[in-house]
Image 1 (cartoon, rainbow, N blue to C red):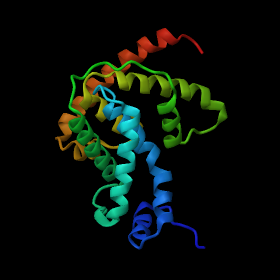
Image 2: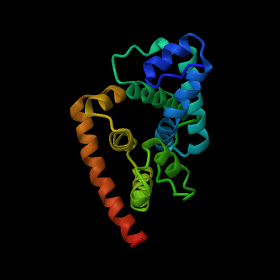
Image 3: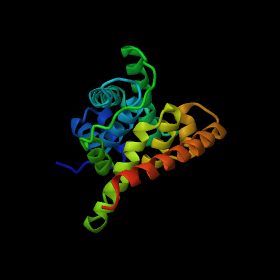
Image 4: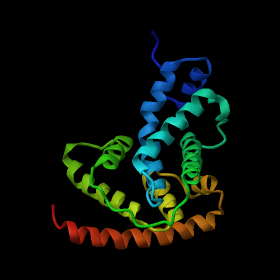
Length: 203
């Protein structure tokens, strides 16, 4: 049995030929990132973000399996995939009835943190504790951001490492608008992290 390619475009081509293993490989590589992104999308909407984000993730990869060649390579694969996830999350919010955005309490179950670590490949044991604390604080504060567009922009920029141009494509907004959202979002995130560090204290 030949080894599967790791390039997303090659996996999509294999999926178009009916290779289920290619879907499994794509899901393993990309689903943690899609799930974290979807959860942060849904964080302030009064919905069960964990359960619905799992549903969004499954729906995204189901759509990719049904029509893998919809990806035409004009944008980065991650940008295209997160656009699908964003649209699915918006559909879920509309379907369940959009509620007034509010500050969601932090449940502290560590589930998002585990997905974040998996999606970003923690570098090694020596730096694990420090990075865990930092990431936990960032995820907590992202969920607390009241402005959903700032939260989305920061998620795409800080967690998914997308450029302003890629974020502009996903949000269908001018680059200047994205820069403004990132600027104000970073200010709000910094203030939240400062409060979070005071509450947490030294490790």
